[in-house]
Amino acid sequence: MSRTTFHALLCCFIVASAMLIGRAPVASAADGINVTIPSVSETAFPRIVITLSAEEGGLPVAAGSGVAIHVTEDGKPLTIDSVTSASDASLPLALVLAIDTSGSMAGGGLTSVQQSVTTLISSLAPQDSAAIIGFADKVTVAQPFTTEKAALTAAVSGLKVGGNTALYDAVAQSSALATKSDASRRAIILLTDGEDYGGVSSATRDSSLESVASAGTLVYVIGVGSQVDQPYLQDVAARSGGKFFSSPDAAGVASIYASLEQLLRSQIVVTAQSNASAGSGAHTLAVQLDRGSLSGTAERTYTSPAAAAELQPKPSPALTATPVPTATPSSSHAGASIAAPVIGAGAAAVVAGLLIVLYAWRRRRPRTTHWSPSFAELDTAPVPADSAFADVAKANGSHPFVLEIAEIGARAPLGAFPVTIGSGPGCDLIVPAMPGVAPEHARVWIRDGRPMLHHLAPGYTTTVNGAPSAWASIGPADSVGIGPLNLRCTPVAPATHPEPETAHV
Image: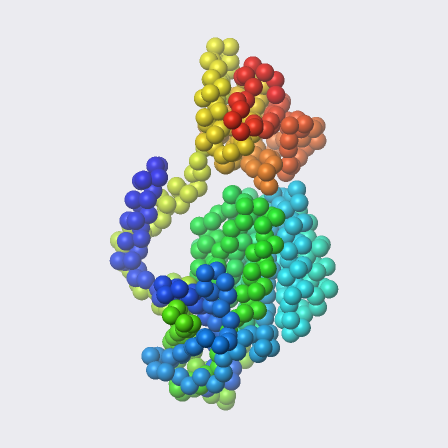
């Protein structure tokens, strides 16, 4: 599918969604300040406590001189008792730190993240608590909520690399864990370098997103590298009122964690007196923040609690996410709860069809050009000119590598996109069908400037320097065994050509 066709389909989808489903109210940044409402506490009703996050130009806006805040409830102004920063109010924060520990985080990636997370933990206030989650083949709560920084640091240091990526489960279970805290300020910081991979998640893509929407917790997502499922991660952040951050490599995550620490510390706490009566149902709060000529607004729906005599104990939430029925309210980008309108079966089919097309296009990653003759063609297949190969390599990213299997005269440039190796027709570097070679045998991509190898096929073997390997960082000195064949990976300097096709790399 061409980019033009994709854009056309995307426009159709947006138009169809707006017509059939309607738009959810979101935080407004059109006037220069992005405002979200992470939480509303009504435990001291009719006094309500509203927590705000505000950003201008990517920098947090804190309470102080020059900041004016106005609050309405169902369109009627409320009396504001106080406006202060979260740190001054000593309002506890409950923070879930979810970290990808799959095999692709090897080669120093996890080490860099551990250092950044440890620095963030050290900045927490004494009343703040945090929990540590690691996820690979499964999701593990390495440390439940605690205010003990030594325990949190030890849990982070104890995370180990290995396995596939249960990303959907990580999102769902992080959301569920966050709801176990009674803190009015809650947030999740989730870091991953990939996508849900290996079929190890029990949660689905949709159910994990529903878990985020129902948790009422900000989710800040950090995507590392070029192989992340960015549309999904952006959706996770948007549904919670959080934010998606992208880092080209693990070395860049330190500045992101530092900015998140500043953002959480700079949250604004507003206390106001509700005009609603106890047990009167849902009410919509609208907050407008002004600073100079700039302003921003956000909305959130809360439910006024029943009178004390009518209150019933709330069951403790389980650590498994409960999907939210489509007819119940869900959180908007600003944290507001809205009721999803019912649409007809025909309209639903149109939207579902467009979603399927868009999802299929996204999953069909751009492929690198490959030359892969069959056994019958090995002696007669023409060798492509170096200039043609160099053009492909140049288009595929600066400083590419060459993947070559000399025994069969096949090679492919490795640059911005991953290269899948195997005997199947959908592979980028196709190997003739032979014993020991799977249809999709292994995949190689660039990670922190070096090629990263992942073995894909159960029942088959990929070796690195003679030893079976599931994940490995490889270079020119390494010999990779794809069944009975030998794969070499050689860097290609900019403005130079690979060696002739007949040379042994």
